[in-house]
Length: 336
Image (cartoon, rainbow, N blue to C red):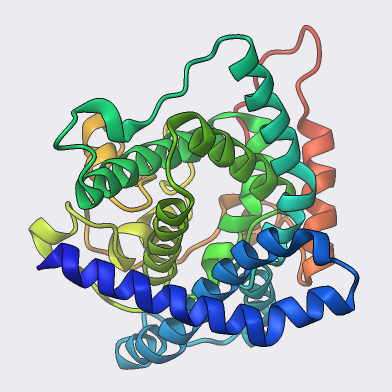
């Protein structure tokens, strides 16, 4: 029954994608002289459609939840509007389009070279013939694999000082809402997405499955950042990341420090499944909803400026990165 429902949804999505492509995207591409990229345009239409569906869910369901039981009043709407810009850039495929013209061709070239040099073609689907090649089973396996990779990368963002200087932009939001998930430095996103595309190519995930994995992950992330007092209960919050669980990750102090003031680290790094935090000892549950941000934003800690507008945030992020790049003979900094 589940497989039939998934198949029905997949066909319906394909029909809408085809209609949108033929009515809007394809004519625009031919008009712009990009007829040689029609196949890529069709894939881009899929990402656009996913983004539109995500935004529709956010504006209907998630916004209703934020109005129902908000953690705090929204007093800085200008900061939220900037987060909306980040969301539109990512969810409507603009960032994906930039990757297509920059990173994807490099990965295709590298993987092609590795195949020529003898790297075997491998797919997680073939791990256990008759079981892992069942569509739903393989999808769940890929979902777990990519969520584990997301957890590992997230910990790395909090571990390496230079990377934290970029990722800190995401944590600097003191007015968290459902729009805050994509509030990232573009270079931070470029590094992360480059690694994820490489992983997808290496493990042989089908393009349609990869799109579905990204779509589900992004939607859960939007909910987990929402300004809503919502817990999945004692058991539920150990099965799926929700707003209460993830808000602790954004809390001033323990959200970005593991060993006290001035250290890097934190808690609750999981993106979808808290399983990884539980396995690696980074989970924390206390049920409180406290202010979000970074310690050095506090007046008594210097009131560091992370920027108000989009370009200011991007510029300050690069400046922090340049100040904290590893230097020969220097040890790893621990201050954020």
